[in-house]
Length: 449
Image 1 (cartoon, helix red, strand yellow):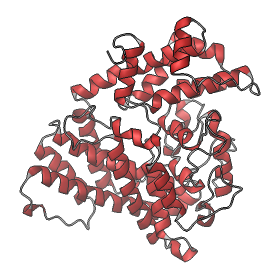
Image 2 (cartoon, one colour; image 1 turned 120 degrees about the horizontal axis):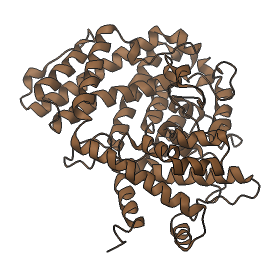
Image 3 (spheres, helix red, strand yellow; image 1 turned 90 degrees about the vertical axis):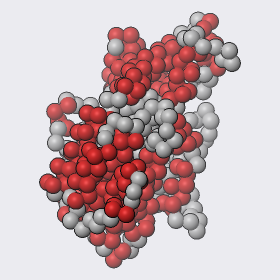
Image 4 (cartoon, helix red, strand yellow; image 1 turned 90 degrees about the horizontal axis):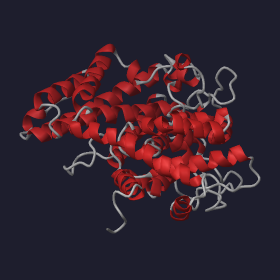
């Protein structure tokens, strides 16, 4: 792959216009995401701690903003390290692309915690949902619902324009490079699970059937290398490794801070784990002795740990730059850090799995998600494909713009579009709205009662 092809500010849906203005194209991507409804709703979605009582606890929104900040630093540092300016590519552009891609990396994730994806998949894998898919869709179309992926839904949210609402194509109209940097899993994986073992790019499906042709257009223009001659599998855009690293860094380090603040991890343990990460980068400088308050000390160590991991990931990218450009790199940047750093990072994650993610409130919320999300899907899917009195009322107040009646499509494709619109609607919800709507549709609570 060639950096001069990989960095391309062509906008999806605006390819023919060729119009430019005096603002940096990739900064405009960032702005479009910030002002989008899809991004704004992340403020009421659980990151780790559901319905937090402390104001400082992270939501999906604050996590996304912090990830964008780390992504910008990674992009600029990598561009400077690789001397891309000598090829006419400004480090600020690389930073802006990774920042924009990182900002929206969670935009397709459903409500009620990290089990939301599994809860949606489970509905379509259980007998009723599976029978429905068998009756309505082709075998190839069923995969998108029985293996629901927030990353694939994210690409769809960013790029799809509902023809009922607008004639403008391309969703948010982001640049090709930002969309490619967003796509950590540029494939629609449909094979056996063991085929993807050992390759970080293919451990999940990152594209819906609906969106493969759209991504293919982007991949062809940017020069992404197709894998094994498959029509729906490409190597990653190099900057997608930085988007992934930004998320990995924030997820691990900030969750430890939240774990300490909500009492899941003791001060001494959190401090030790963060110090081990910081010391894994030899050039780290510490001056925590001047800080008195324990909360402030943990905050200081969190910042230092993030900086250390940024530097280590930049080193890993530089070391593997050739393999990345040739599409041969199969690891993540975190997994390519020196062994000492990997060990410190792994200890951080293992403690979070053991103590932070097992907090009662988290487990109960995620368990509730397996009732609320399938419950919403069951009610809405049933209403979409039936004409009883209850169905008509739900169609009128909720499914008005979600039932596809495009006569140019075959029946299976119309069914696919309708189901995809319903699943997107559920995935789009905030935690509070999902619970509220479920209670109203099941009669547990009535509107304004």
